[in-house]
Image (cartoon, rainbow over all chains, first blue to last red; front, side, top):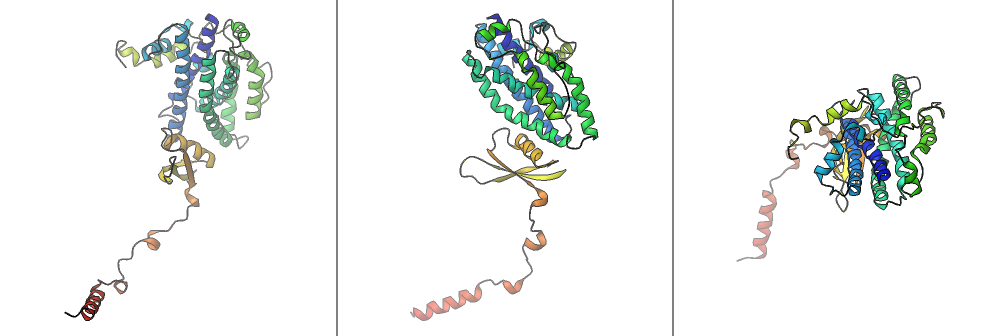
Length: 251
Length: 93
């Protein structure tokens, strides 16, 4: 139970915080349509987080009301989250936001694929529902990158590659498995370890960006996502800014 | 950048209808942005985006109504009078 709960939280917390980071671009993305598109994609990720939090609440034997989901999403202490530094990282640089969007969704597809035939059938249902939206997310990221990477040596290319250099080391946290993942694998909840996505992810990055990252880059961590990065607290403060104005308010 | 006109079609027999416009760097970006800008709340399930440069335009000088051609206009009085006369001749009282 703890292993499964941890596993679900790992994915749910990544989805939640990634969604939050995306929606923060509303109003400040490079152009109006991108404001809408990027924050809409962020809302999809938040929706995926809700579906996964509902599964967690089911394990906890708690009815998945909005209040219960909010409590799980916003009111845990940092050490109870299982998010990665990759999604906690705060940036106001559009190149980093765009590259992170592409990497995250590329890895997200691989992650859903691990559980599409899950022995925990409710998770398999969530996977197929989420993956239908991911096709668009990837097409959105690729459409922008196709255009921006079209001219080697351009300012756009340089900025994107710089962003990539900043983000690839953090890939290690996104691919870091939760504690007791082996139990998840032996029970057939997931078909392979999160860490097994390392090589496919690096390969995909190199194909997309024409780079030469190797197997020693972004190596999956082994700390089981027990601690949060320095960026976590500021992010949580931003997320809970309105909620904290009146914790007793009914939403 | 080019300006694209966006058309949406709902499922069923409705025709494509103009939804708005947007600027985009290429066709693919126009399509991706149109989906999120105009169809994210299920306003339609098919989209056309048309680069405005590719639209054949009939301008006002060509299409607009010409209101100054009295030679083409009549008020029907002559026809009405003739038909009235024909009726009276065929149905003498």
